[in-house]
Each structure stands twice: as C-alpha cells, then as structure tokens.
Length: 403
Image (cartoon, rainbow, N blue to C red; front, side, top):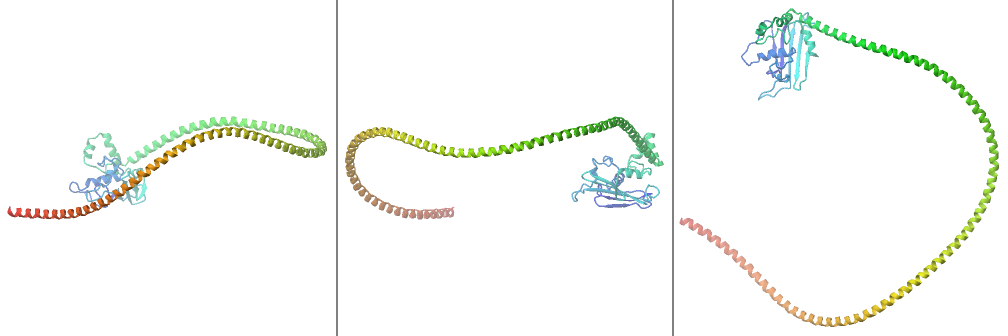
C-alpha cells in the first residue's frame, strides 16, 4: 500500500484546487522556505483526523481555511482528499484505492469522507489502525520529532514500536472489548435491579389479583341479592299499582260530578259578575260627576280670591301710573325745549361745516399741486444724483490721469 495522490483546496495557502501525485520512487518534496512544504504535511495530518488546531499551527480549526489576500477574497471551506492505492488485503476494505477526505466550513461545521461517502472519524481511525498511518503515528515525522523520540522514555517509544509491529489495532480492539464488557456488566447490574423490582411488583400484583377474585365473587353475590330484592319490590309496586288504579277510577267519577257543579256555579258567577259590572259603571259615573263639581267649585273659589287680589294690585298700579304720567308730562316739556335749542345749535353747526368743507376742498387742491411739484423735484433730484455720480467718475478718471 502506498500514497497515490493528495488533493488540496482552500487549505491554508492552497487557494486553488491543487493535486499532488506521488509516483513510484518519489521520496520527498523539496522547495525554498515559504513555498508550502509544511502546509502539505499539515494537510496530511489534518485529513487523517488531527483535531488540535495548535498542532496545525493555528488558534482554531477555522484558521486552516484560506483567509484571503489583498487581491483575492477568502474562501468559506477547506477540503483535503488523500488517496491510497494497493489497499486490498491491507485495509479492511474490498477496494484497491481508498480516498480519505475531510471538509471544514467557517461556521465550524465539518465532515469526514471515505470514497466520497460521509463517515465518522472513528471509522477512519479503525480503517488505518495498525498500518502506521495516522495523525500521531510514526509515518508523519515533523521537525524535532525524531530527537524527541530518541530522548523520550522507553514507555513512550513503545507506542511507536507497537504501531510498527501492527498490534495497536488489537490493543484498541481489546480496550473497546473491555469497555463493552464493563458496559455489559453495568447493564447486567441494572437488569438484576429491574428483575428484583419486577419480582416485588409481581408479588404485589398477585395479592391484588387474589383480592380482585374475592371481590368478583362477592360482587356476583351482591348482584343475586339485589335481583331478589328488586323482584320483591316489583311485586309490591304491582299490588300498589292495582290499588291506585281503583282509587283513580273512583276519583274520576267524583271529578265528573264536581265538574258539573263547578260549571253551574261558574254560570251563576258570570251573571253576578255582569250585574256587578253594571253597578260599578253607574257608581263610577256618579263619582266622576261629583269630582267634576268639586273641581269647578274649587276653581271658582280660587278665581274669586285671585280677582280680589288682582283688583287691589291694579288700583295701586293706577295710582302709581297717574303720578308717573304727571312727571312724564313735565319731562316732555323740558325735553321739547332742549330739542329746540339743539336744532338751533345744529343749524349753526351745519353752516360752519359747509364753510369748512370749502376750505378742505381748497386744501386738497393745494396738496395735489404740492404732490405734483414734489414728484417733479424728486425726478430732478435723481437726475442731479446721476450727474453727480458721473462727475465723480470723471473726477476720479482725471485724478488717475494726473497721478
């Protein structure tokens, strides 16, 4: 089994989709500093399941996505696909070529792929276990890893030798089996507790079932006794019904006789009611006439008292009006004299007003002439202002010429 190709798109400095094909005989990748050799190793480590952003020289997993430059916008996804060939018989798969892929998006979501089919990280680890290929196996040795391996403890170096010997897979399977056994043991303990609880519930249910059977027997006895009781009550009710039927017949005959007497009494009551209504009508007419007469008498008495009171008031008003009439006559005489004097003053005022109106007409004519004269003077003043301005301009021109 060997590495066939590596497809990188959007991972760190690989903005464009790049495919590296490893032909037989290729032992390394060389290039100047900054060309991306370490990014290729990081891409291999990342696609094989590296989950530590610090191991990939970043702060978080989104840092592996191409972050853009001055001339190129950042990408939203990073994808790496590693293709292995000669896998048949080495890996637990029927395919001769296996493509392991991984994607991550800027929102933190990611996915793993085997032959472009979604899978889990555990599936990739189980597939490559025991082959020496993995994110922390001896197949990827970065700078300083060999010195650290040589200077480490024998227990730490043992992991590398076990991976090279191919027993890591079996140790992992052993751990998984032990973990499943522990989980099964815990399930057995819980099952024993459930069985004990169910046994307690079964004993309780058995006691309840015996009580239910005893209840059913007693309930059937109660139903039999209730049936006998209801039969006895039915016979008593039937005898009572026959007696009541005989009583009802007698009461019906008695009711017919009473209904005939009631009809006679109702006819007599109807005649008496008609006579009573006639008497009530006559009495009502008499009471209405009496009330009307009493109202007329009361109205006449009130009218007499009111007329007497009104006569006294009118006499007082006549005396008061006589005195006021005398006073008004004297006032009218005085007002007539005042009117005569006012007419004389008014005539004099009219004469004076006519004279002043003539004066006002003359003044208006003089004012009109003054207004015309003022307008002509204003026009002359404007002309003089224009001449003055022109003279100033000429004077300025002459002074400039003299200067």
